[in-house]
Length: 216
Ligand SMILES: C[S@@+](CC[C@H](N)C(=O)[O-])C[C@H]1O[C@@H](n2cnc3c(N)ncnc32)[C@H](O)[C@@H]1O
Image (cartoon, rainbow, N blue to C red):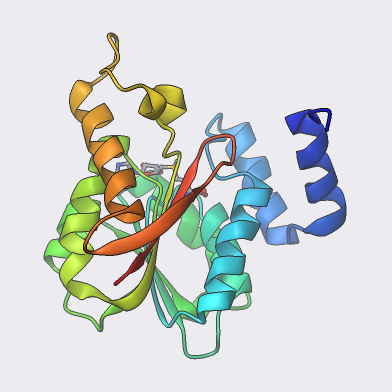
């Protein structure tokens, strides 16, 4: 079958299969205006939302909030007893996310935490986590996974975004003009979620790569 252009496939999905809320559109507009449009794309948001819906997750943690675009996709799929903690290191971004998420009909089910991902897990004293989404500093994914590990329930779902590492994760040798440590850690993160004693999983080959692991 002749390859169909990525842009055509995405346009089909985003115009006919999934739908952003007004709140999501408002956040995307603000991100464009502030020159910070690095949020997940709508079809990726819909994937995460769908996984959450299938999992019926109760305690959900996100590392890397930005203005709350991906968080808004989570909120679409929450059961009434679910709660989301979304962790953001930048106070500016965390405040923006609070401002936008406050308007969401499920605002009472989300807490924007101004913290680094590491600090957050080091201080976590809540119930065990059953869904973890990581979309923050690329060198930190493996650290967050390891720090969260004691709190992940069996069956917990872990999702990492941008896990092709802009194509570099596909290379077997470390790239020349990029952090070798980040490259090594991202490859280890993917492998750990895919094939290890702790997780079984897969990668969804979105343009940027999305790794999904289920805690054994
Ligand atoms: C790609 S953006 C997140 C996009 C968001 N998930 C979305 O799709 O709407 C990455 C975010 O991670 C935050 N970040 C970077 N390092 C972090 C850290 N160590 N702990 C928590 N957040 C961090 C950045 O400030 C930035 O807002």
